[in-house]
Length: 192
Image 1 (cartoon, rainbow, N blue to C red):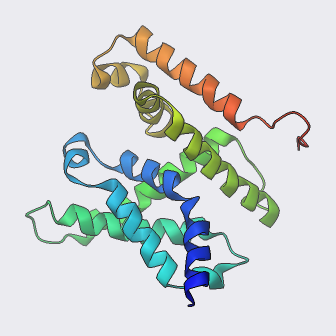
Image 2 (cartoon, rainbow, N blue to C red):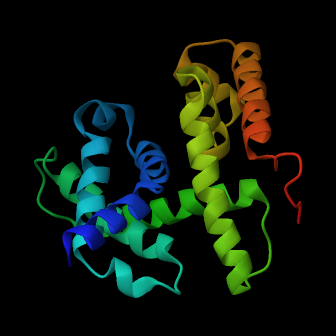
Image 3 (tube, one colour):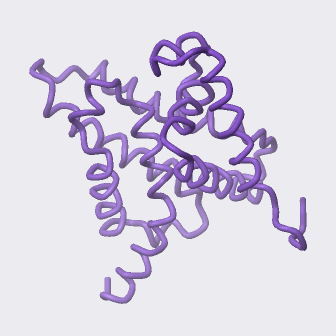
């Protein structure tokens, strides 16, 4: 791969950074979040994708392939902090949980229809949603991730964030409102 092609691939991959970061945060419990550098895992994933078969996936949905690489890299990083022997049964659930988190993003976007063009739009929407979530203030982002993307009830989110249920509900409302504003088509753009 020429340096120019490498740079083009790196630029194309950069659009997935917020998405992978979001998936990583959703998979780690608070203890591991303090130890695992999710941004480092994302960077390693980007590098691995850049150096592998990214260009040959032109007409395919790249998200499942990228999630698989990310899942493997995240597992490698988690293993560094576990003293137990490798347990394959534990590893499969992580990749499954990453796929479940991605599915929750899709459900939240309410896209139906598995045609190739709709799958491409859904993938773009997932990336846009991840970028929108990344722009939120930390408290709103955390409340939305816990409630909508991890599926925790409001009461558990309230306990986790050490805030009242009303305060958490307000954070979720403000964050969701902001995300909708970001994701709405701008005036003059076609609305399909």
